[in-house]
Amino acid sequence: MKGVVEGQCGQQNALVGLANQFGTSNQRVASSNAASSSLLPRSSLGEQMANEFLRQQANTMAPTSFSMKSMQQNLPQASASSSMASNWTQEYQPRQTQVANQWSKEYTDATRNQNFERFWHQSAPPMASSSSSALQDSGMWSSEYLDTVDTSLQKGTWADDFLSTQENFGMENTWKDGFEERWEEIKRDMEKEEEATMQNSYVYQDANPFLSSASPLEEGDQLMRSGDIGNAMLAYEAAVQKDPQDAKAWCKLGLAHAENEKDQMAMQAFGKCLQIDSRNKEALLALSVSQANEGMENEALHQLDKWMSAYLGSDASQVTNASPMYSSFLDNETFNRVEARFLEAARQQGATPDPDLQNALGVLYNLNRNFARAVDSLKVAVSRNPEDARLWNRLGATLANGDRTAEAISAYREALKLYPTYVRARYNLGISCMQLSSYDEALKHFLSALELQKGGNEASSIWSTMRSAAIRTTNVPETLLRAVEVRDLAGVKASLR
Image 1 (cartoon, rainbow, N blue to C red):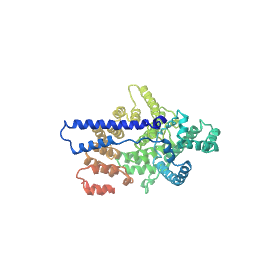
Image 2: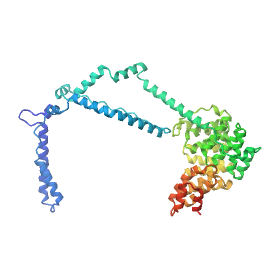
Image 3: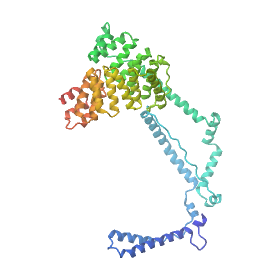
Image 4: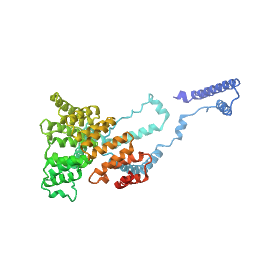
């Protein structure tokens, strides 16, 4: 390096020579441009300015030499740098800690139910110099810095504490064991939280006239067949209040809530049913559907695994869950295992497929977005049970998810023929109309669904979908938009007349 930056006595150094050569090269380019310009049309003002700039560059002389040692003398001393760094740290660290703690709390709250992958990477170590004499001659501040670091390490700093910790706990396994222990703790907490949610006390509706009924369960069945879902739910609630251990009544109450587009209430009722009878296949399958609707795909997969055990006659309560229920992504390994169980059961049936198994297969393939296979399975189930409105609605939803909207609308209409007050089918039909950009028709179906829906429909999720349809409708009345914003059902009805 000395040969490059410091020339011999009375001579230019190599860098100065390079700079002069660069000036000469620029001058040649400028001369060449000046000579060739006579052969071209008269140059513009911009070209004249550019040529003048190049001539100035060619006449600019580089500095004769520079000394690295003189630069070193102008650098701040180590003591001054340390003092400035100390003052800066004292001012910065408290505020940084406060901001970090606040950010960490907000970030944790916002992402508690999400799954992340963390990519760990290590920076490459700095390259060492090939010549120790060069470091000594340069006298750079880096040598002082390294001396300071060596001294601090010898006196005992955080590195000593870290090394002693590794010696006490094992350097290779400390981080791994601590991480795994904390991860298992998080898993246990989230599973306990989910279990507590499933076991929450069911909130009954007030002023239930069916509490005095001698057989509220039978009355509920009659009301469901007639399409009076609101009173049917009251009758089923009266049945479980009279006999809290009636698993069948809890299951029917859950089905009524699901058809009323109230999946959260449905999951609570199904959970109560399965606490009493863990082998109830209807509750297991319906709970899986409600969980899938709420985005709980791994939980839904776990219920299907239990459904298969109950279908084969084994104890569904013994089915353990190894999939990450806290993850928002479907666990493919668990899915493949459950799918293999279903396909083996289907192969054993031969040429006479069971519609119940095909129905469950349709739900299973909806979880991994294999809508083509799901449609095939549900079509087999519908062909065996053409009077089942739930199957028609499920087939319609699967067709819609597979971008077969026209076929989906036909399936929804079949479901509504069988069960005209089917809130979920009416709501799904409105969504399919939106997919075809028929927003006026969609608004009418959403209004109908809200009118049919019972039990606190002011908080219904249908309103948000209706709002999306309203703002996309051409020439929409201002009164309609206001009514949708405040969730005024009567105002919406008056605006759509």
